[in-house]
Length: 161
Image (cartoon, rainbow, N blue to C red; front, top):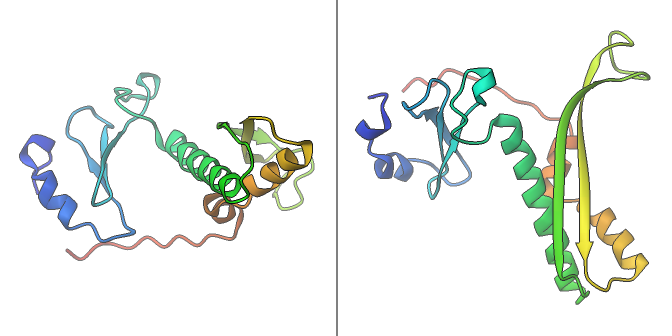
């Protein structure tokens, strides 16, 4: 298959992506620029210039945060709408860090680094304190949050095609 996106028929590639699947491949533009296809959309991912990329799109961890933030935002909006609560706006800010965990029971050493995602939820509207507390609780029940905090098995195989 040709490596440059200009030589690729993206619509043909998109048609081959099964629902619920994505395909990631080099974009052929910058050294680390990638195309992400889901059958309906084309996104670009890249690394910042400081990491050898061209900064043409978010990096992998930013995409992960975006997925969690989108799911959190939608979950909160849908729950508030279902309850007819006066939520006017919701914003989710996220940050990923690798931190040294002082009391890590599952770590091999006391100075092991642990991935940490901080999430800040901003709820706008005349909500009662109980409603705000419940929306905060619901925010941690979004499907992506549950996936990230569950036991995950990832199996990588060579594609015979």
